[in-house]
Image (tube, rainbow, N blue to C red; front, side, top):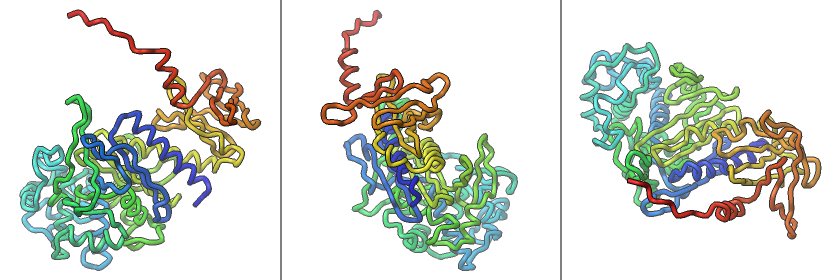
Length: 462
């Protein structure tokens, strides 16, 4: 592992834990796979707010549209076995479709360019107002014409990936969950992944949660409803570790994979640009993009009560999976922040040995400041930010407990001194950063309680 990668991974975990507490969300799982092996995983918060069950790394979450990447891998495996071609029409395998649907190709459905309806006339299956569609119900909806002409633009479709599940069943003569588990999940070495519920009796399962609003408090969502014919689009349940491990194997440069290099290149290639403001693309069952010069691919997921995102960065041989168990889960935001953190450490390198104890989270009434050694400087990160290193000041260490702000933003304290204060036991107890005195969280909490004691409020006039 590159020397800079371990401190980056460590700080990402610390930052996400802080973010979870700040946003008051139920729980989050984070896992990192380097060269296909899990090198770190974290579980923060609760699996169930009603029972107070503590979240562990072995809890499974509904990973929703990550399911599409498994389905795409299944299609590519059948292609490698010469049982299917990407330019075959779906109507060659599934009957009873509207002619415009039947004539779309498997590649178009995989890349969301078939023009199919996203969720049908009633998408209540995604808000718990109705069960997920079974095969006959899905086919009945696919008797309707496509929404737009195929091959004209990227247009996301859950129904399309439900249809691909039916294609797999038609080719293999087996139920989708049975075949995908034997041919994709098991060979990938995933022991904590199921294509749908119910889960094995002994499996730990994190419950989903609503937002606080409009009801006024979070409610627990069971999250264990079967996805039925939509399992191939949204039904999977897995741990963050298994999810990261699987996406690491989809990288074209992965040493071990369930798919050939050619299949992985075709899956992760940019087939269609996604119409939106930033640079984003879709391949075959995976999304992709570029962040600060790094190419990445992966997928996001949203199941009622769960939000998740996974990214694989081939240049770093790293895959990261973040699973959150609330409808307002911040997994996508945290993934973007994680990418920024990785880039800072990759650019600056591992911290110099003499700086390694210049670390920790320090507080004032305004909030927290993280001292993060990277390269030959100590960065002042703001863990409240989505990108904690945005406009981060830099400390140049000049002595055991002294330094100066070698760089700071214009409204900050550029050029001013920094000094650490030690207690009688020789431990750093506070730090002066220019004129700001930062202290441990417990100390600042006591100071706030002392300075601002609660006062009896006057009744509000009616």
